[in-house]
Image 1 (tube, rainbow, N blue to C red):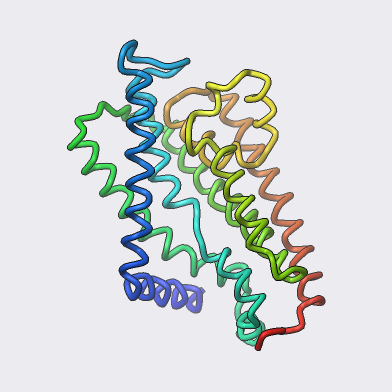
Image 2: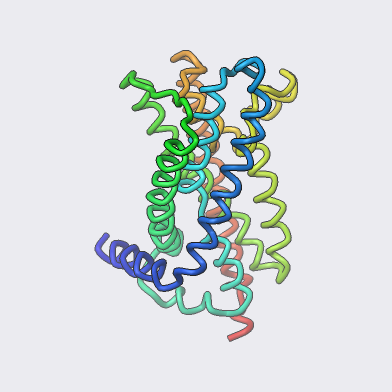
Length: 264
């Protein structure tokens, strides 16, 4: 475990070595937050509600998305595809680490820095814009919310890891990654709560793993589900995580047999 902690610390220091990239990334997220905020504020301005959401619930949802995107989404597994294509990946094969966990802890530093920044952004803009937020006080819902976030982190990471493994077979792995990230944003509820869609579309989305990455945890926080529905959703998260991680493990071992170290 000590070596992974060292990886985390090195990645943490590296985050602050590229300050401009970090600041530009956070600026993009601020623009995204304000854009979505004003869109939903305009929709709820007259009636104070939209679909099954009050204005306060929608604003809370938007701010929660900004925070959860920071802790759940990551970019190191995207870099992994480039490292496979240019041959840099070879150096990891001779190191005494499990690459899945090596990459996870390398990405964890980025998540932590982004999380702290996202919390500061939400506090600052919450005070400036004088928004009304929903504060969940039921400890049971907060515990289940935390469990759902942890599972969502691993579902996203396993999916992202799996998509990046396509680089073993193609030098155009960034194309499928772009499609994956765009699909993820939409189907996870990054732009709007999924249950404002038609019930048939909403029910169909619930059969995909993306559903459980953002929308499901936030719905727990807002107490949109009863306990039996929450437990059923957590079981689905566990099943998806088991399936995706198993598939990623199979593709990983087949990819290693295919890897030639081209580009070294």
